[in-house]
Image 1: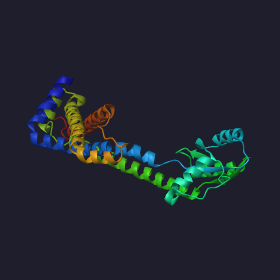
Image 2: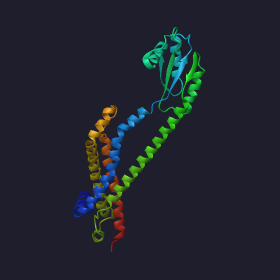
Image 3: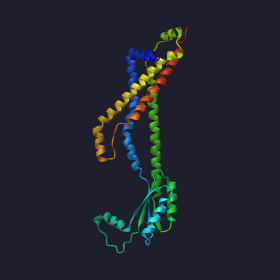
Image 4: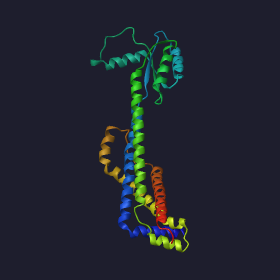
Length: 295
């Protein structure tokens, strides 16, 4: 009976080529839009994560601190909440870097070197501004620490920008997904699978409501599955068409590499589209049955 219902759904779609083509076109375009956006945004998301660099604090070490004490201080700094990494910058290395950044590359020779040893403390990306400020306050109280430089205003503002961008991106993605799902559900109900007379006749010969509704569900599922496959192909075609432009961007930023979405994601899109079509077709069949009661 299921195979007969599937064949009936296929014949019904073939009998109405215009409506079926329109439904496929609508569902394909609705699914292709988020797929194309996701394909283009996938490497940009990684670049954004790298751009959202974690905050850093510079800890200046007292001048008479030994190498062993500096190592012990690094260990205590690494234990602070939110700290991801520490790096020791010797005073001679800091002076050499300062001379390289000086216009002309020359500075009066300093003897002795007036710069202190420094430890660069890197906070994790998920460290909140409050957590970072608390950790910096604790660092200032440690022994052998002359001072700590940390731009807490920049970190707080950057965190607000990152959170706002994440929230806005999530809301936009959710809106696109909801609109795409609604369009697929609407498209699945466009073709007329069975007329009222045929539904009444099936009821007269004893067909159950589930049997009468099944061709509608299968027709919607077919529209969802086929449109999902076409949308994946369209997204891959769009990526291929934009290849020269994307190659130019990739030449300026080697970390950007556009590839089709992983096949599990594409398979998931096809499966979800088929499920949405099946649900929408079932609902359409239920309405048709209620509109054509048995005599």
